[in-house]
Image (cartoon, rainbow, N blue to C red; front, side, top):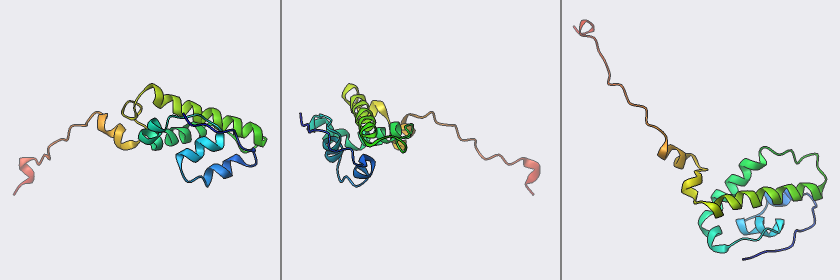
Amino acid sequence: MSTSAVTEPVDIVARLQIAGSAEEFFELLGVAYDPKLLNVARLHILRRMGQYLAGEDLEHLPGDEAAARCKAVLERAYADFVASSPLDQRVFKVLKDAVAPKTPKRPAFVPLDALK
């Protein structure tokens, strides 16, 4: 497992926005991770983190509290994929659509009296 200490909370959101890889997210926030799991589910984990962060209001928080919230959200998103696979979680539309019920297509109906 890889881990790193939480960096200074100087505008953690800005630092996360310029992070170039999933590993940077984990290192910036000091979250331990399994590189094998991260290689398989990196986009899914970050997407789920984004979904969770959408419900958070980090704008008016002090830097250290915002960093702690971001860390908790990343840990929660990561835990989702430790417990189950990306196929089970289905965070992307293409995966959701693959199991969505199909609406039956109605055949085109032309009444006979409309034909000449």
